[in-house]
Length: 620
Ligand SMILES: Cc1ncc(C[n+]2csc(CCOP(=O)(O)OP(=O)(O)O)c2C)c(N)n1
Ligand SMILES: CC(=O)[C@@H](O)[C@H](O)COP(=O)(O)O
Ligand SMILES: [Mg+2]
Image (tube, rainbow, N blue to C red; front, side, top):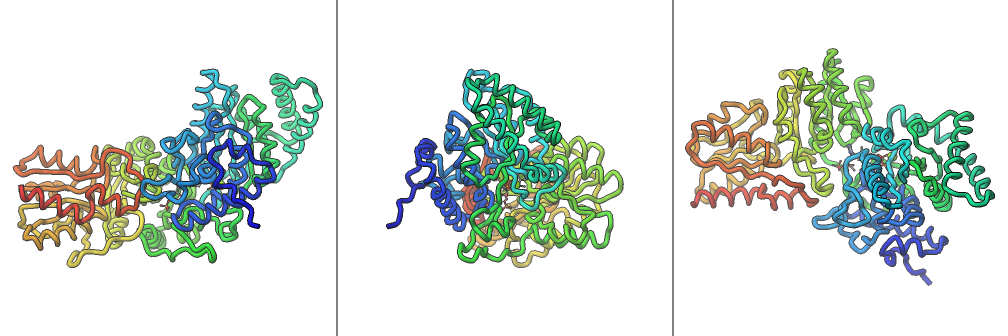
């Protein structure tokens, strides 16, 4: 007889605690099955989640969420946590519109204490949470779970530096699977490799524990004294770990797939009332052979066949075209360098990384550093191109101002995933870059709608302009180029001429504007389109053209405040313009997860909405 499934009966961490230990292995299997089933359909971060199944279970056995708070770094590995904290029934809605988020979301559950999506925030957040608890006399624990990849981000060290030697109940769990999205990089990764290969410490610790158990009335002060003695002896024998030097008690390394060991060591962590770092070793993709063998492919997937592990063949997209173009430039110019902050594959730099190894730099999840590093390269005569997602570029705002723009350093930013990104949702939408780049002097911004434009804009960016030059393009492929439109290397292009109505736009939604124009033409409404190729600085000639129209509509796939539409409108309305101007942009808010097509419709950036808006205005 088939045994009853356990996962559907888990409605809260209390249910996890109530299970006999022998049932936990089966539960791990059910969690893995749920992950594989759902992610194969909905897409998501499979390999990272498969790797933390036992760890998540152990955390919920030993600690009591929500009193004890668990902060998942990046949050892309929090799906097992969702399954164990009352969200199993909604799991099929993962990453869908109005469904469960693929990251931690306090609005979704009391078991998600902090928003996540961007890397390396967990230690700072957890320390803040822990400190607040201490100040309020709350004896709950706070646990940050951070991956070895996320540990390459500078913010993690700011958190460690600040939290070390405090007296708060903070536990940092380092989930070390040797992988960021690609193989992890840098000298800390090397330090972790050394620690992984010296399991003597935990054995030593176990000896201490056995001793402790024999000592009657072991209280807190004795616990601490033992920890100190133990650390001292250990550092004499083996040298200190980085974490100990930063004031943490280091425990580990421990096998992150051995539930018994994990529970025992977490109990020990719980008894040390000062910051502890527990080093856990896991296998990315654990339990699904294809993901174990190809963790990169299963880091983020848009869906796959469970039997074969095959995903739909990836088609040409802006990232792959960029990857080709940058290789072309590098082949003819030894000054061209490519920089990524741990996103080699997804930004299209795989080929470059193999072919031009000495000029390729994966700096880790360190966008701030990447920008300042690029400025240094540029100052000494190289031509650095930093390929970065729009949402992660937000990290480097000050570096752009202070380290690049202020000294007019010649760096090129290839801003990928600019605009709506879809299922990753609020934390990943690329809707702020046009607005925040608008605020920085010495910055030029291009926005291709098609691959052919990316080709000439990239060249222009590398060779024709001074200062910081950005080329921003969306996630995925180019839209179908409108009939009769030939991309031309100019800062703007005008479609039509002589109409009274003008639509202005840039980027991929230019294609929607062209469709809207066609459908309006069928209704007898003539409309010209002004397509901006360079969105900063604005070409005065483009403004001059707009002045001649009676009705001007600006459509922008970006936030309103500070965006291109607002800037254009301000300049237009403060000059000699007698017509009406309206801006149709994304709202000044956070855009929820949904397919790009659905969000476009919701915010009136699709062709039908554009046509409707123009038609209604023209009827007035
Ligand atoms: C600031 C920032 N840059 C880049 C990313 C993209 N990103 C998401 S997960 C990830 C790798 C994380 O590796 P690790 O922390 O080791 O977790 P693992 O997937 O190995 O469990 C990267 C680079 C991000 N989320 N945030
Ligand atoms: C978790 C994370 O931040 C990234 O892995 C992100 O989900 C990538 O999404 P893309 O599919 O756009 O590369
Ligand atoms: Mg990792």
